[in-house]
Image (cartoon, rainbow, N blue to C red; front, side, top):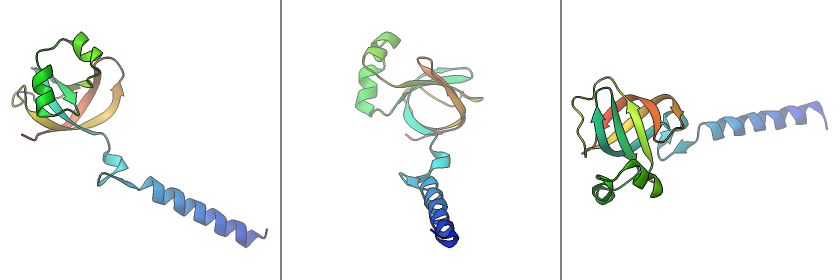
Amino acid sequence: MNVNWIRALLLLLIAFVFAVGCTLIDGETLDSSMKIEGYILEVEEGRILVAENITWSEYEEISEKTFQELDEERISLIYLSYESTSNLKVGKKVKVWIEGGINDSYPVQAHAQKIEVVE
């Protein structure tokens, strides 16, 4: 193999890695993939509890269940700390942009950068 062939192959590999790294997921870049949707189960000062990826009818079925029952049913829950929870209400569907890492406890915990009420 000559040097030009190796350079061309290396440039092709770099272009491939760059293209894969910028791939879209559901219309969003990978940088914004820390977004979740769900229904609010609890609102406290400075944090909310959200059940992720459920429908309204599923929310109605689980809204009165305990953590243990939700865990047994494998409902994905997340506690989100947020400065202003006064305008958030139990039962509302929200989109949440997560800032930083996620604590792997149950329910998992994270900090919400932005919360948008969907309905």
